[in-house]
Length: 357
Image (cartoon, rainbow, N blue to C red; front, side, top):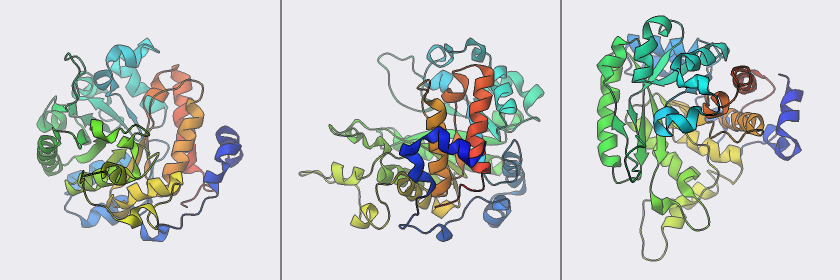
């Protein structure tokens, strides 16, 4: 895919994303993805040789091998969003082997799966593509539905199955977040000790974040702080939703309510309302890029999926991010269409004319 193809896909209304210059946080201050990222960043950290090897395996697999960027296919949605809702659009994906095949044919760096999915297929595929085992989930069967991430397996079992990394979700801001933070901090410590990388789904969850005028679950300031908490418990890679607004702290500090701490510069010199600047604020909170930021691909909307995926990839790359983790947009369509969509995302990171803003 050429830069002309990219321009055609995103449309004139998004053309400015390709030319925007970030005047908030200069790109030269960030630790940007590069071929030597693992050695330069993690090579001076406390990560042991086995962890460095598994990180290197992720960065040297698929079409983005050796670039410093990541394209990951997740399949935890069968638990998080229910198998029926996730795989009804293409029933082949009730079989986790077809997800793995899609990740391989789609040129991904890694596949994020449940511990049960890897256990069923580990001997066939663990040496063919790096696996990220999503170790906790929000099961969606309890009535009424609740939102709490609980462990579904152990670090030792994931290691025995050949996993390259442990993935986990924390619902920051939720009543259960204290337990989840301490629980996953211990999980990540054990994972690093056993030589596995760590990936954190850094999500916000609190009804108060959803105000009458907008939803601050995707605000740059609140998601940025979630990222900072995530890297503090030693996440190597942060998965975060793309920010669509800002000012969560301001909105929640109304009347007599006092919430968190914030500075006016967070909404001026550190971030404008440009999507790339908002995403850069997320990168800033990942120790200025020392931990890579991968943004979510989001739900499938049908015909607009390709455009949305390419736009998200452009924003992430130009902000200084490390890549995309895209699932439903890829597997809720035919196999070949899924491969094509994954390749389109990767082409953004391979296109030299799309630079860091």
